[in-house]
Length: 352
Ligand code: ASP
Image (cartoon, rainbow, N blue to C red; front, side, top):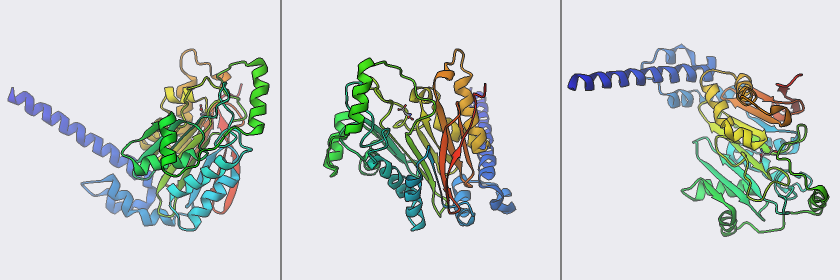
């Protein structure tokens, strides 16, 4: 019996060693050449220490600081970069960047002015994640414009991760957020027009989607991300998408990288998309390869209906390398790096 027990321990130890070796390889890949040979020879590699020791080297990379966001949101990325250039951290940057669009009433897919559900209620989903892996999220939040900031309060002021509905609203009010009507005249008109036919198609426009997913790397090389959305226009009341789900709409691992998603949330949730992308990067894939594989997991499902919906991912790794990929054409990201704030069309899967 004891011998078996001993063998079992040995096997477990071996597995543990293998895993450590694997983490070591992945982390060395992720911090690239900056690590140098001394660390390669270390017996006991601690990923965190390795990354911390190279913070300085990472900060010197030309690529940093860096902001990327889904779709065409140059003002939001400019706001986030302003925060970073002033010495702010990645968390402040993504929050401020997202807030800008949440307040923009012309953007009908986030915050104030977001398109309502089929009953005329604007309900918001948002989440945020910091360099320590802390996160906060709100789902089905009504009457509060800055869902991303409420998510941050959940993360920082409570021991919880996710607040929903009326509870989320009351929490926000208790933190000083002002309740207001989020249904603007323009969004009300659009909803009234939709109501004439009231066709319920839970599919996403292929070319026009604007959930904001934002990732930033600050001068210290630390990564944070945020995601904010009013979700699918004219959704069934109560529907929640991927945007507030940690691991689906957003995932950040400060040792590896981050990813955000947009498009038909149900498909992202089913494949835990953003977590998948970060894990693929941990295994050594570039951000581009990781995004492509995550899209591959959706489109190669048996009976996938992918021709009828869009999903797009953007990802960054620790060195500031970027990837983006979508199912269909016309997904884009905005990137602010090296003093250039630009919209970049994403490569895509469906070229038929
Ligand atoms: N992903 C969002 C959702 O499904 C929608 C979007 O990206 O436009 O709620």
